[in-house]
Image (cartoon, rainbow, N blue to C red; front, side, top):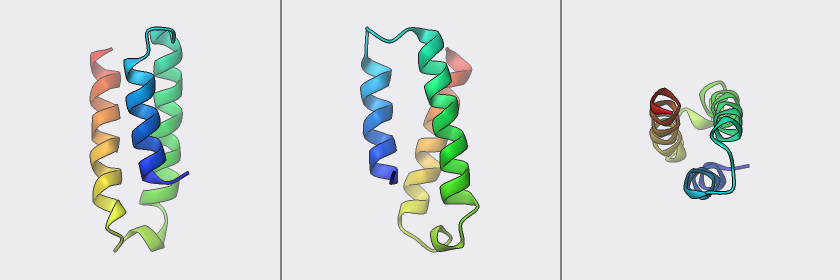
Length: 68
């Protein structure tokens, strides 16, 4: 899954009224783990334009989890 996929899924899940808050937290924690592994521990992302998007999304998800 690429960063754009994570961004779309984050927006869709965040806005969903059918998914419980607990389930959202679980899904977003999984997103954080995957983004860390794919983007921050992969040498191909170090100079990629997607790295900034990944960092922004990571921050958004962290903020959401801290507020929820």
